[in-house]
Image (cartoon, rainbow, N blue to C red):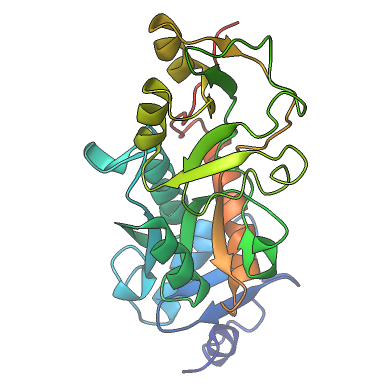
Length: 282
């Protein structure tokens, strides 16, 4: 198949003012007009024009626009496949890809499998993942899908004024498999980690006293506070921002991440966006 800009020229529209950054790519999963403008045309209009010139079906109708995305089976309340749409984070990611002109098929699976299958490009992308230097060797990271405010909830028999690097020494907490939030502190703070498949298991262990503390959103913490747990601030400077990732083995991964970020920004500006973890009232 000829490159789109060559087909434009062969059809007598070689003077079409596409601009210096016009680009495209195609593979067995994706066909995208990456950037360009015709006069005052938007990217959307240009994309539809290109499909018309090439004699193809529209991106919304073509199976070529279908992309497979992997996510975990549960990350409540952000991901919950018992709810319509799979939860607010799943719906937001779906909207972003539709804004990009792609039709996403989002499949829940164990977190480890989602990570490995995306790494070898069986799936185009996966979400949400915490960012760290080790993962950045294998993946491109999007801008944050959410910024999650957190507080520490203590087991009922523990009384601390706040969490610090000193008073968390050798204490036990819990996190989901694949999380790297604590990697930078495991040696400095000597925190002991229990890893589980579902975050709900962490909350169960907090309730029965098997762990010393658990980081969570203030709205969730308020529920535990009513049950007699102490809720405190912390000095640990942990980042709970979630990102979409694309493997560096994906030939167009860097371009896709940039386009994903641009589409996400447009939707946020249009307020076509569901809050994932609402900012708690002060």
